[in-house]
Image (tube, rainbow, N blue to C red; front, side, top):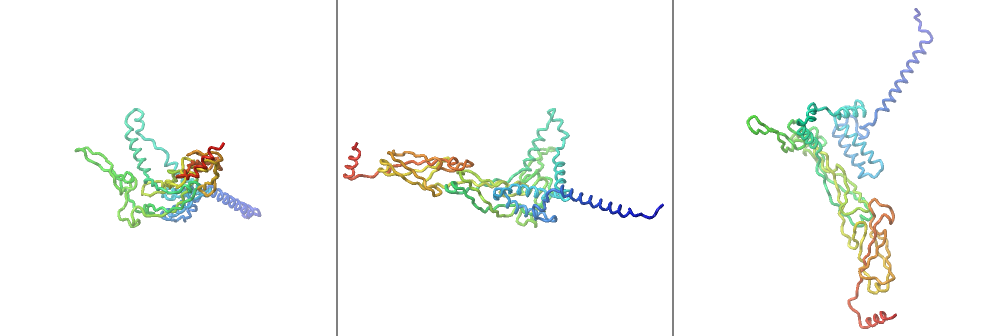
Length: 385
């Protein structure tokens, strides 16, 4: 037995070490490739961030990149990315899965939770035995889980000129938002069946009881109730929050059109926020009247102009001049229609093809009386051939 390792031993050891280094580098590259998105980086928080810090970061970023507020082309994708990140990190179970295995672990967990479980009694439904009451209870449970706060409608008074040109309106909105430490103020309650809903047993007769639902504001979710006088949320379940929004009044909008900000209305524990809806309310114009995409205006001319013709200029909503001209006799209430000088058609083409018409109704301003000399001249003029 030769105890001498020989000259090739060192080179073999070096080769083995080099192989391990290459494998380690490949494993690192593969793990980075499959690591997916870093939700902490997306929300700009540390991995040790509290639930309150995560929620605060989400509110700030979601308002910054909301598609209705941010006109940049990538705002919608960024907003969706922020929403997914918050949905994961705000859920303790999903966050734990993400910390262990990234996006892939969260996806596997969601697939397992979304797998429908077979109802052992569903076989009886195929033979006509029951099932209806159970389906009704499931539907009620689904509706309770999807409760929303009311939508808020706010009228926005705008001029006809603003609707003609379009305008961005910056507004401040005060709303109620859920306390960032709301999760710390909840306790288990088996009687709570959903937000604001509690069940209790009512005795109908000796040995007979009935389960009834009653309203209870302390119930915030199924199996969860609010702790009274919770120090983590001294103002209660919600607190006041001011947000800045940009209402895009697009050229061609009509009275009654709306600009919607989804899920921006008041928040409530256990509820999906309702929508904030701004309703266009047009202020009447002193001269122009809108009818559909057309603009109507009454324009006075003198008796002389009605007889011998005229050339006039109308100042439009944006200040540009529109000429109306006639060389013949004009009748009372005669209408002149000018193509492409009306309101912009919402979502229509550019130029005059994408606009309605300007409809001018001519009214003749008759003199109150003539002198004898004027009458004589008029007779001579009218009788001349």
